Image (cartoon, rainbow, N blue to C red):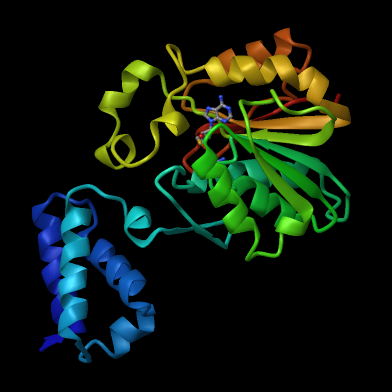
Amino acid sequence: MTRRTELLRELAAGFAAAGLEAPEREARALVKAALGLSDLDLLARGEESVAADEVARLRGLAARRAGGEPLARLTGRREFWSLDLSLSPDTLVPRPDTETLIEAALEVFPDRSAPLRILDLGTGSGAILAALLSEYPAAWGLGVDLSEGAARQARENLAPLGLNRRAAVIVGTWDAAISGRFDLVVSNPPYIPSTDIPMLDVEVRDHDPRLALDGGNDGLDAYRAIAESLPRLLATGGRAILELGIGQEVEVAALLAAKGVPPDGPARRDLGGVARAIVTMAL
Ligand SMILES: C[S@@+](CC[C@H](N)C(=O)[O-])C[C@H]1O[C@@H](n2cnc3c(N)ncnc32)[C@H](O)[C@@H]1O
């Protein structure tokens, strides 16, 4: 018989030996997610036993976690903007930093009842689109992704949230299949320079799809394509909000300005102080 506390200790010891940064926290997160338990279940009812088949399952998951597989990949789920999203191998794990884009949107479009037309380029799991539609109940949105698997996943995430009636997701390359204008164009494009990809943490390099990471030689390919199309995609008064990789603000601002859609000021910073969301001036 294995008690919850014993299992936690065993998994944490394995994670520490594997060099994970926060072994106890990781063990708690894995046990909670895999067994559907709360912090209270672990704290106040830690002496309860775990069934042998569950222990075996958890040991298997822990071995994968110790090998560098992110928790979100093991559970197939990730929370973004308090929305519970499903992942597939075709989707990036949405990052907390990306919530800076949602905050920027709420700042520049403060009227929550506005019937915004929203375009999310490279929608992946649909995280950004779902968060925006949940904040703007009268808005309508279109998600685009080159990956068919990601587009399918985005649709599967929008439906249980009741957002599919106000959204469509299509497969395509950036704006190729799109006509019409939008009040808000958002994108978290792939922005890692191709040659940096082998140096990324194993959790990212081996578990996020390459299509979601690779921004070409200098990391800016997607921004060039998006900047080119913004003038024909934005409606009067429209704004674009683009996520930036570390140190990309100056170059992306110049790309946008060159196409007549300059930033409205400094990029909004994420919680780590990184210039993360660049916002264009209203057209
Ligand atoms: C960094 S991920 C962002 C995913 C999601 N929006 C998020 O923030 O979690 C970039 C997304 O762009 C998509 N993508 C890459 N190249 C593309 C292209 N040429 N046209 C459209 N989408 C593309 C990828 O498949 C991936 O889903």
